[in-house]
Length: 184
Image (cartoon, rainbow, N blue to C red):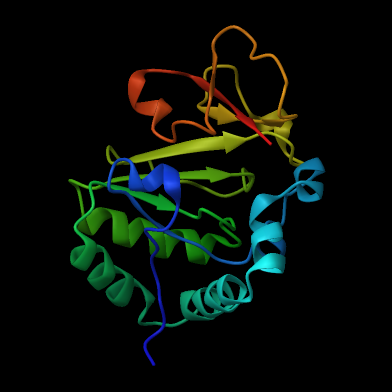
């Protein structure tokens, strides 16, 4: 049986024909902080055993020397305009991030984006990649006011001025917004 590498099941991604690649959040978020207590990807893995198996398989596959070529084939198959790296999970090493840089360079017309707390890594500066720095981790001090950023807050929290609700729209960053407030 062929492993499933990419997903179109995220409801926010379906709105704009986007696809994503997920890995296990608990194992791959080395800089997680308070967010670990409310992580939706961890909850999904607990509730849906099929999802848990898929993301475990995906993580194992990221270590393969074939990862760059195989994930590239999957991206070509779906031909989506937007690709979310990690609906669940994070960049767990520089080597893994470097593989994603190779993939992104192959698809200059695809808009890649990723939320991360792995701010200790050296991220590529590519025209087709938007990095969203996620608050709630152990490296929040590295997030600058002008960075694209996200934060998980309570469901009924009032949105501060300049922040948008990312639980409704995952492409807020295309509209020139600098920040996002994701409700939980």
